[in-house]
Image (tube, rainbow, N blue to C red):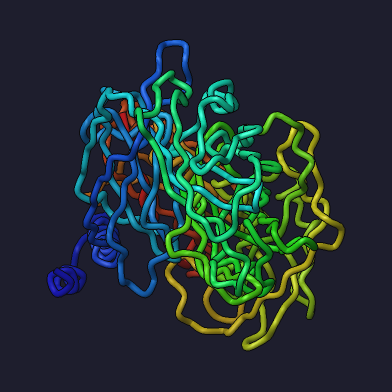
Length: 553
């Protein structure tokens, strides 16, 4: 296909036809570069179907094989209730699994995945898969028993429990004469803390449970029981276990272990994993060495999450069991008092860096360029908030090759009811290698680029979308929309504009103001400069860049 395109480009075509062919070639090359392959699998997860008064629905987890391309930056997952018509999308970064929560039992859902590269070019949709949540109502199950001492047990269940049944001591019995004296349901509603009469060390016991109900009223199976052993107090050969997760706010949780744990293993962020796209940003062990305070990207209020822990060791060197996990509910009612934090800086070229925060931030504070400073003489020229609300694209003067830089940030506010402000002089370091291996649409080389074209938002969209771009100085620009055949759909702008950021809206119509059908479209930004020809000033094209967007009717 590339050979054919080169042949076409050598023809003597009229200027209008030649431009159409060039755009087709760019689009074809983009599709060749971007096309990723996926193998999708759908796994049905446990769920509850409640009465019309209840509030917990089903979950579906979608997973797929990771891509191997070197420029792969992440994945988007789409959901819809009809084949090929997607009404929701989530940017997952590099995750290859996502759980959709609160889905309606008995309904069929359709899923597809796209990949995007470091330049935010997005691939075509993967093969579509679908799944239907059945209407069965699964009762709670006894999952695990954690022995915390001679008179304390933690009992873990498969799902949240109804409080009165969970705290009724008559629903628990222990063999060998041990009495249950008290029962308290944990905040996450899946763990019950039992206080008992003393156990005998080194002896095995059986815990039997009856009449425990989940939030829908489903009762645990008759005869549910599990064996456990009270340690004999000799040398420690027992690995640590997960005890509890406490949600502090939407970006902070406390993870409690049943014994003191090793600091270096407990503070290694890679030892923790949370589902539904929540990322671990920081882990710090408390003074009592049994609680780890974890900072995350924002949870979604009202969701149930699974925390997986690996490679954490106790003070004797025993490692936590592989695949250790615990469920917890996020139900934050108190006021958000946690300020945003700097998470990372991604270098996209000599004159553009992306700044990532721990949560969505206020647009006016994020786009105030005076809130950012870079050392070594690098100037911040402009700032624009990305589609996610937590990433800010900074346009700067040129960085020097093979240098380390420090970005300092002030006055950035989150979107809480009473906005919290980032810590004064928050700073983060990053390296600029000066490599020319940046994708199209990135700032390459050591001189500032003439313009930057950003991904439209929202995308996919209906009925309209924003297209944003940046100019380094006053220039002539032409912004147009084309169909996949390279045919002009609509000219959005043809004018001279001042330097800075600019935003235009496309409402999904053509030049005749007629609604165009659903599908993939290409928007093209051509930037021009004035040049003297024959004593006249004329606009000469400097460069053109294109991006892909999807319209869904």
